[in-house]
Length: 311
Image (cartoon, rainbow, N blue to C red):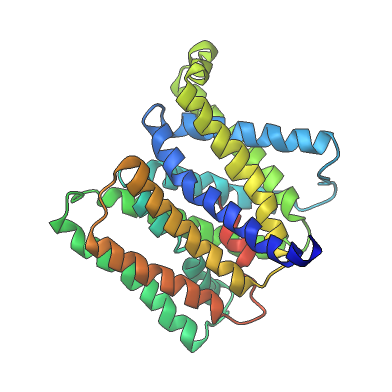
């Protein structure tokens, strides 16, 4: 058994990247039955309750006393706040496959924003791969006019907003990681998201609690929010942290690319979403670009954890 232990981090990586990949499929399914804020409210409430139970029984430890909570709430405003508003609303106008491709650009956005805000200049090879990823996105956009999905540019624009929000989140989280443990940041993020999204959703339902919770009697809704709230937000998080504690950030970038591949495959296989040749070319450019951006980054910049804390 011990000789196989060295493969555990990679097995965990396969699990959490697959969970994240399928999360786009479940989000798309959920949006067919409820509004974006209703879905987000349920998702983050279940995630926060799950983490609270783990805290209560002593599996995780949360200590927020005498810490910079103002900056932590600013972090939560970008993610889950702005990020999930843009991502979930954007998926109303795109396929889950395209959402997976767009969200894969987060490491690229982090590299660009770090150069602008923190003056962390990317290496020459990094710059090449950043350009390759961005080129992949524009290739998809410019070829959409000849496809059956013409006109859904609003969805891509919103997903682009999610990518930028996640980029700012990563920049801020670098500073907060010196003061907060990852699980503490996640705990506050889930609590903030549960409060924000449920407040908005309840307002949209005129604060009628009976009709608000009636959706949970729908089997598909229940499975969707349990998957997103428990598996995607809690189980995958612990798998991710275990993997990142055992392998390098460059190696972890492979799992970011796997998430994109899984999201594309899930959309095509389970939802019969159209996937055109130009999207294949764009996806390959994005995946290679994301891999290169991480692999050829400066050693002092650890991006592995930053890629995945978004989900």
